Length: 169
Image (tube, rainbow, N blue to C red):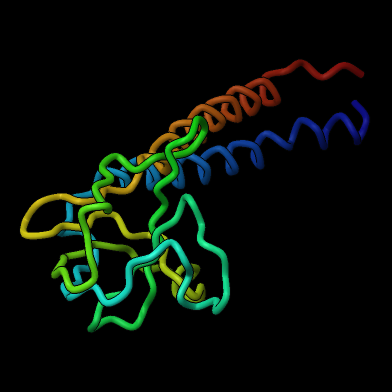
């Protein structure tokens, strides 16, 4: 058995490690999509800005697939994706046209290291007005999670193949 063949055979441990890490990330994505409101950061307030134009970029053009939201007592801009074209991860509920500046709303969102370093937060999951659901983010995370689970399964199969494959000299 030559050295190159032995090195290839030992790669199964790295493949299994990658499959396990991918599986953990995928499970997180699948479960995050359906977490209840109580598992997110909650903020209530009056809408002071609601537009398709980003308030952080003066003179910017309106974006057809995004709506920007700012509450009176919170200093972050929320960017809500509203695309409905084929291939878009459309929101599960989108009644944002019913909102106006001055409305009191409850929002539920996530904040992580990446979103905290961005000028706007794209992780708003739920938006309620008077106890009614107005916006709910798409289940794109869940779909990506299921795709990664499938890829992890393929990595496990590859790892098993590398482990049991007979080595030819």
